[in-house]
Length: 395
Ligand SMILES: *Cc1c(COP(=O)(O)O)cnc(C)c1O
Image (cartoon, rainbow, N blue to C red; front, top):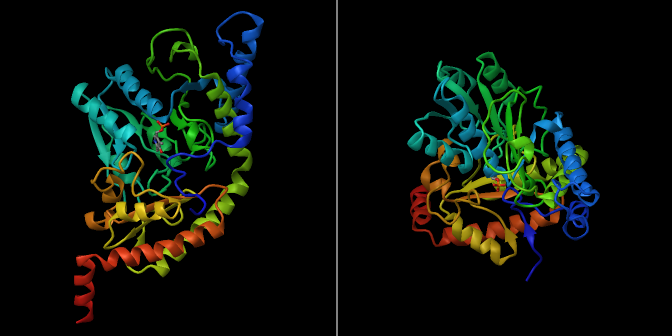
């Protein structure tokens, strides 16, 4: 079989060699519990402090405001559930968007059904951008939290986070952002953007899986999420994932250090891929904003195509892509994000997300486009809908 062409970096990334190297000693050599008092455990404790500092530096903030979790989903759950419990005497209204990750949407549904929360799900425009005037209009005296993702995992659209932060601050409302896709890809300054809480995940930035963090600005009265020991300033109990934290810190440091060069290269390849796909394959369209877009995200819909068949045929050629988000592929519902930006059901079904890494080459993309042209042509040749469409157009 041909070599693997991995174009699903929004689902997860390869752990970078320098990240893995940093982690290894903390499995077998320095395995002490950071909470123990003997000198041997100090190595582990110092490693956790260093990782926390590296993360804080990447956000231009204090390390005391970084709380490690077991990933992005936990950080999202914590931000919403614990903020709601802590502030519900002030109000029960939360504003979010229709295009959030399920870690946010399903948590909102839980709060609505089980905890008496009132949730507003904002529409987005045809490129997936939140309309600021609609956000302002949705605010009520009961609103305690605005949660808007920094960048979308399916279509790559980057939100006007600074403006949303300003609106939240003007109204005295807490602002949380799911920055799992944005952290390490675009510069983030939590003070400049007035972000009160921010979720992120290690495995999306060439770090390990199963580690994430929630940034919580000093003064936010959010409740503890996991009860037990005094770890994470008594807000999230459990022995620290020391190798995970070491790897995450190294990955964050690496992401910031390489950001400029890496993303410039990715943007060039991204636009090359978008251009080839949308000009060389008829009846295709780009999903998401052309400019306000993650450097590595391509999402294109092909009419008269069933996304799953396209993915399977790409897989037979060693190409890994995604038809929606990793969590929803396997189900037959079209992506909630594509529906929210107005893509018709049947077109949404034929969508493909390809997300690049710094290892992606132009040759990889040329091979992918060439294969995809054959695949689309083949699948359309078997589609009765396509046949009807062509017949109509020939009359
Ligand atoms: C991947 C992802 C998550 C979930 O992170 P995990 O670490 O896999 O739990 C949440 N939000 C967004 C936008 C993501 O892309």
